[in-house]
Image (cartoon, rainbow, N blue to C red):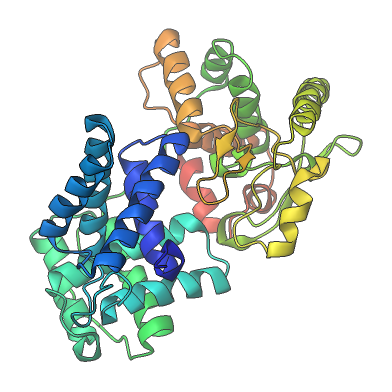
Length: 409
């Protein structure tokens, strides 16, 4: 029997990303994957192409004859259309009956990309960004055969981004790095562009920095857990992703320290916790411990493992030190396994709370989560902290990165 297990993981991942983009809830995604599995089984049994629009008509007729409701048929149809849209990025090599399984050269490139990203333990967000740029590069080249792709194609693509798409310099740099990764680790070919690429115009960005009264005004208008998140951003100079991904075992309240594991650039660092937060952090620990105990009694599958973790680490996800310090209110259903796990608070929830607090305070500055981090560094400088000390606390590799937001201080 033909099954989804025969489809490359990268194709299943693309389908799942399509569902997330459509804001299909995790419980509903289980139904979508069911329709996809039924559709692929139907194509295999009756020797139809999975990519042929006529196959969808025959499949829906089959569902109708089986007594499926109009609503179910509508959902199945939407599922097939999404699958065909995703499969366009993976054109088949031949006319095999199960064409969804046969990847083109570009499809194999994306498979290899995911393998290398996991092997090198890059963040999922980095892998997603690189994948999107490679897809845009493929589209720009009209799916030119991979063996014929060279650095002259990259030159044309990057110049096109600057001249015709009018992208900013940071966007062009991002595309450059993604294609450098493609040539260096996947295609294993030379990538020497020199000065041939027309560069997008660079603009000088001066980060926004809040005054201490402005910070206090914003914090006074926030509520937990978002208030505590904001206090850690400002009190420790953390990045938002570092704060949301905090796990219980990373805090040492007895020594008033916090350890960041695999921060930006996969670097670890330790930061001091402000004395004024210790009692509040202890109270928060008691609250999430009670929720954790309830989850265990309900038979939940633990928290999500860190990105790039070995399979054996899955067993640790029911242990207390591995629980997220800022757990989400609801459990997340994992469609593939049917298990329920608890994720951390989503960044959009915090951003919404912060925007509301800024609006109520009447502050006219453009404030985001990173503004609190910049303000932390600037206020340390005003308190006569050494620039190198601030650099270490911020987790910057280059002191120039630290200096940039301090120019306003």
